[in-house]
Image 1 (cartoon, helix red, strand yellow):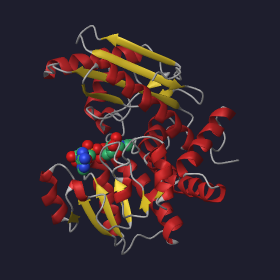
Image 2 (tube, rainbow, N blue to C red; image 1 turned 45 degrees about the vertical axis):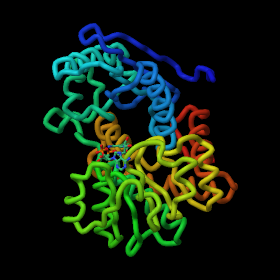
Image 3 (tube, rainbow, N blue to C red; image 1 turned 30 degrees about the vertical axis):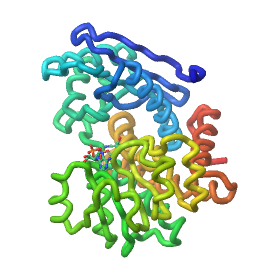
Amino acid sequence: MSQAFAHEEVVVRRGRRSGLPLIVAIHSRTLGPAVGGCRLRRYDTWQDGLADALRLSEAMTYKAAVAGLDFGGGKSVIALEKGTELTAERRQLALEDLGELIASFDGSYRTGPDIGTGPQDMVVLKRFSPYAYCTPEEHGGTGNSGVPTATGVLAALRAGARHVFGDASCAGRTVVISGFGSVGGGVAAGLAAEGAHVVVSDVDHSRKDAALERGYGWVEPEEALSVPADILVPAAVGGVLNGETVPRLTAPLVVGPANNQLSDESVADALAERGIVWVPDYVASAGGIVYVLSRESEHYDHEAAHKRVLGIGDTVSQVLDVARSTGVTPLRAARQMAERRLASGGGGDATAS
Ligand SMILES: NC(=O)c1ccc[n+]([C@@H]2O[C@H](COP(=O)([O-])OP(=O)(O)OC[C@H]3O[C@@H](n4cnc5c(N)ncnc54)[C@H](O)[C@@H]3O)[C@@H](O)[C@H]2O)c1
C-alpha cells in the first residue's frame, strides 16, 4: 500500500567512487537543521534501504521535537544490496561518497554514527563537511554516544519506575536487559550500582562471561521477554514488541533505547490493554543526541549537557502523566507533545500545553 509523501527531501545517488547506493532522507527541518545518523548495512534491495531511511528520519523528527532540540529529522543510508562485496577499500570510498553528499547540504543535514558506522568513520565524513558529529575526542568530537544514551535511559527508567511502582529507586527490582552492548552495558552498570537485580541477554554468547563476571544474571535471548521481571529494557534490535511477544511479557514497565521497538503502532494499544507501561523509544533513547548536539553544536560544557540529558526523566514523567490523565497511550501522548512543538515552529518547551 503506498503512503503519502511526508518528507521534505530525499536524495538517492550512486556513489561515484564506490558505485554503492547512497540515500539521504530529510523528514523535517521545521525546528532546525535535520540530524540523524549514517547507517551502513545490508538490505535485500536498495529500496529496503530507502524505506529504512524514510522511517528512521521521521522518527528522528519526533525524537528531536520531544527532546526540546531545535533540530529536525534526517537519516543517511549506504545500502549494501544482496551480493555486494564490501572490501575495506570500497567501504572507505563509500564513506567519501557520502561525505561529499552530506557537504552538498551545507549544514541543513547533519550526521553521526548509526548501525554499521562508528566515531572513526565520522573522521572521514568530516574531511568533506564539518557536520559529522561524534568523531573521537582527539578529532574534536564527543566519541561514542552510548554513554549519554545510557544516562538518558536510566533517567527514563527511574521516571517510569516512579510512575508504575511509586518509587524511582530500582533497588531490589529485577531488571532484564535484552542486548548487552554499548547502551545495555551502561544501563546494567548504573542499575547494579543502585542495587537492582540485573539480568542480561545477548545473541552474542561471548558476552556471557563479561556479564557473569560483573555479577549479573544471564538469560537466553528467546526467554528474555518472558522471564519474571519488574522492568524490561529492550536494548538490541527493533520490532521486539509485537503480537507474538506482548502476550508473553511479565514486566509491568518496558523502557529502553532500541529504536522502533513496536512492530506497528497498534502494539501500543495492546501493551496498554495488558496494563503494561511502555515508554516510547524515541523519548527514552534521546540521551545521545541531546548530549552530542548540546556539546558539539550548542557548545555546552559536559556538566550542562549531562544535566540536559537527565531532563529526559522529566519528559518521561510528563508523557506518562498526560497518558494516564487523558486515557491515551504513552505513544499518543508523546506524539501530541512533538506535534505541538512542530506546529509552534519550535523554540518553546515541548511539554507546555
Ligand atoms: N548508541 C546510541 O547512542 C544509541 C542511541 C539511540 C538508540 N540506540 C539504539 O539502542 C540499541 C542498542 O544500541 P547500542 O549502541 O548499545 O548497540 P550495540 O551494537 O553496542 O549493542 C547491541 C547488542 O544487542 C545484541 N543483540 C542483537 N540482536 C539481539 C537480540 N535479538 N537479542 C538480544 N541481543 C541482541 C548485539 O549482539 C549487541 O551486543 C540499538 O537499537 C540502537 O539503535 C543507540
